[in-house]
Length: 295
Image (cartoon, rainbow, N blue to C red; front, side):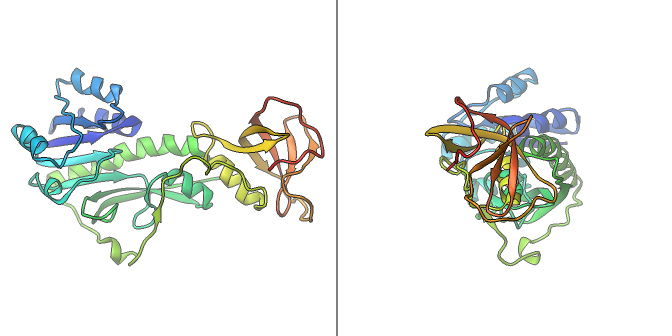
């Protein structure tokens, strides 16, 4: 039997929780959700299993650690939790603390990884379970698995793959820890520097039409629903674009990026830096004419 302290939020945490409670040799001693935006689904799932929910504004405080001492947990598990584990908390359980990260470490540390892998035109993304240390996503790797990305993928499809992938990989990592079969991999043995991605925020959704068609295709699919959608201005009004497509064998030529150069049965063509794309799904309150320019 291994006993966990489970820190989580969102569908990532729900899927993994449901998988973990199916294993009779894994016991979840308590669940902690984000304090500032408490996850009602994870709270409900815990209560249905008779698992206590322990809330804290500071999981590194003496008060919290003293409070959860009674659960005698062996391992802390973080799945989309938003507080940083400090050294004392990391080392509090006998088997230390682990985190599940939807990124291929040591590359793609940080935030909003599924957006960034699409923006960067990656052909795969990773899910990594690693030991937590004093850095950000820098601890020794326990397990890492990769998943292919095709041109049919977007933010929504990657999310679904990652939700399931995180649950599966986290479970496998916990079983390795439980059985003492972990082969720790130091991240600097893969790359001495790695890569860090910053959190995306307001304004990052604005389209730069002076980008190539491929860059725009990747940008738009990277933040499609349930993301904020890519935005631009058209005739003084905001237009939100959820999907576009590249045009096979489109001719490269000079013209004004962002100009609407034609209408189609499904949408309209927009000039990019090199060729043009067809906008297929959008939200806009107004008329669209050939010759209009977005920017």
